[in-house]
Length: 325
Image (cartoon, rainbow, N blue to C red; front, side):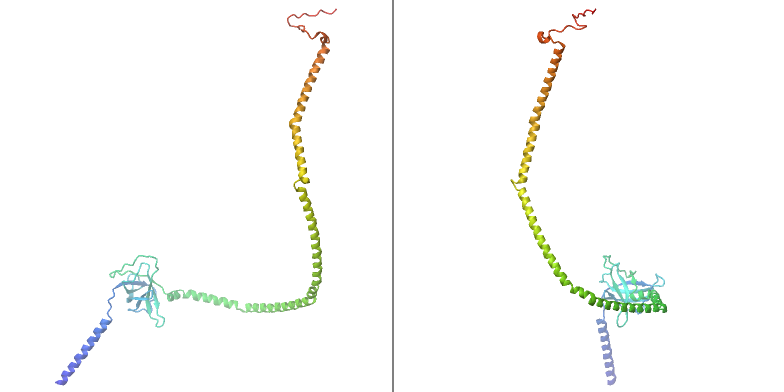
């Protein structure tokens, strides 16, 4: 009887211990975070993504993948439901991509935002809003893999064509021509060295005497230039004396001024008087002419004066002269 009671006590203790451990685990793993539900829909494959996979916002773990199934709204698409912490500032410009951890290769959802000031995305757990799931880099490579392979094939085809037998022969001929040109260049270099030794070096040796002759010519030129400078200084002195105050040019200017004043006085004073005298003389000559004409017509007027003239025809007192026999 005692053995049974000890066994029951031991079993009760073990069960109590297990219950305490379960309660401790539940208490330690409890999560009081409030999360909102969002949906992702994509036509691309989501290989490696599993429920309870991590959801990260700019590298920070903010939620979990709730479920993965087919999209009932868009035929052929995959729908991924995620739960995200309500504190995450999601906006209408937020987008998600499928990323992979470097070592384990496990997939997770990465959420980012364009940060363009878009309005906040309003959560609704009954009708969860959708966040666009953009293709990952691997998916983009898969989509463009065929085009990349075609380009690689085109490059390979052109390389094969470039390295064909005809082109290889041309390249060999070009290398041979380059070698010939190099040989010709070496010959030209040696010829140039011989020219330097046989022609240019003697010419360089003759340069010092030519330099001495040039120095002598320069000295002679300097002497001539000095003489010319002295002559120029003498001419400048003469011109200075001519242009100085009281000099020849000054006296010539004063004489010209006096002559101009004399001509102006002659034009303003003497010539008008001479013109008046000439007019008076002409008037007197006309008067003398009229007197001479009167004396010629009536000489007795010198003795008796002109008197009263006889009336003419048609005038009162006119008497016709008698007729001549």
